[in-house]
Image 1 (cartoon, rainbow, N blue to C red):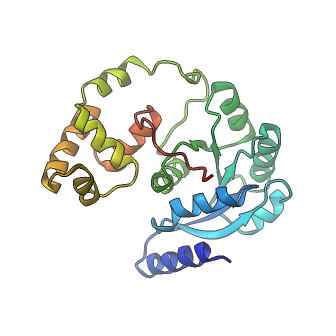
Image 2 (image 1 turned 135 degrees about the vertical axis):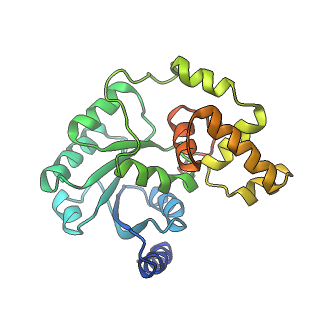
Length: 238
């Protein structure tokens, strides 16, 4: 294992000692930079035990399932047929495993192909690395639902209700929401915006009320699903 794997292992052991439920995860990717970017997003959360990563071009479903993962995070590897075939094989070997696709392609037809193969959900590569762990966990536990049919094509307008809720946010509230969705704590947001933590909490309470959500996880999910992150940095490291 590399240094990233060692750090994740130490976090996992600490969470286990505290009785926290941790999911076992395997990453499937054909690019070491993608693997490192995913590790960055997961290492601080303590939500996952990093079982390792495999090259999606050569690894078999049997090898992946043999590690007894709860979650398999699959990079789309720019080959939809190969990705779909691997997902189908994993689900055939072990249906209980949550298979989540990490992709740049979020159009309806492509996603339908992944869901037909058995994918549990999909996460955009435009997701900020620090928000990745939250989205993967929420999706694997069925708290983020991706509608299989009638998805908006790339560039299409959001549903009227979502657009109306967004427009009710002030510029500062939207800025705070984007930082929360990016994984920043209240203290970090306060320092970035040159305000007090109490002011951040005030803006957050307004965001929760206007979006009809109960906490920062639900607010982050809303921001990701409805495209409120603006020019968030992509997960891919170049």
